Length: 400
Image 1 (cartoon, rainbow, N blue to C red):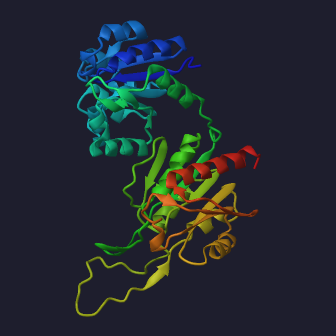
Image 2 (spheres, rainbow, N blue to C red; image 1 turned 90 degrees about the vertical axis):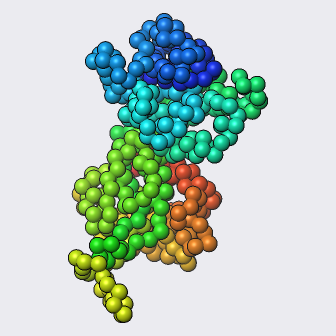
Image 3 (tube, one colour; image 1 turned 135 degrees about the vertical axis):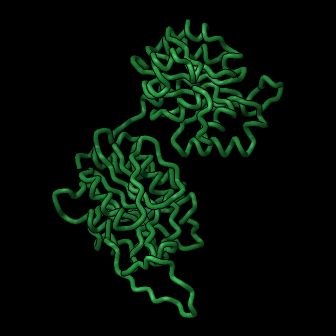
């Protein structure tokens, strides 16, 4: 079931490293090619010779090995794989991954790879429960890393609880599930906008809004996971760029429109950005001074990106999706907006302060199409993104 698949297996320090040898054997039995990267800590528990004998490949250890760099190089090593598996994934290695630290071959390869990563954590129960570890794991998963385990049971330290590395057959199943995942949007291009825009008042001040960009980033990640070649045009956010997504960073509404038009043609465009409606007509070259009277700002309308992409023309995407952020008369205003903008679908949400949607992690969507309105349950923004991506895939699979 894994015939021809290329796995880079990173074995970090921990008593669970012995299980990685069985994982190598099982992967080889199913036709996979396995290259092993052994950390200094991992080599305290399994030997390079045993890993090489089971994998039938050279084992890599040293970042500064002249021979290894001339023959393979850490960049090729990190990218000539279909999947990078870290088993066991120690708390230390995951912390370095989260921090972008590249102080050994394993951390450098993980920072340099453009391939999906599967983590199999293993550590003491208190280390797993520590807020730092939990935060690091959440950050890595937000960046697109997948995880299997840890399980609960007796640990090598004598304690019992979560922290036990998943068994080789569990990791093997997670690898098989990864390669078996459907990619119904493969071969299609998608455009997603996200985040706020900023419109300068003077060199140090600007007009903006409280959008976090989380929903748009989640949508881009979900579309890429289903195989779409995805371009994400993002205003200023603190979101982590999704894996396998091309990110174009912009600041103003005009820059966002230009980046969107440059990304065309695409099959689907999702306008999730909270674009500023207005910008100052003029922008002083110097900071405005406080001189006893408030300055008068003259504003002009920004380009309507959703309406521009929805307009008839040879480059109009076959499917254009917008968002309606409302604070009152939610569905009625959203229906009018969909008609006015000319988009195919529209996702309406309540962004009043008490909803907690702007900047939060959850969203409640009213999904508008020409066929009517669907009320989706309140769910995480990642769940909203997956639901929308599945609907987009079903739309195109239906021949639309």
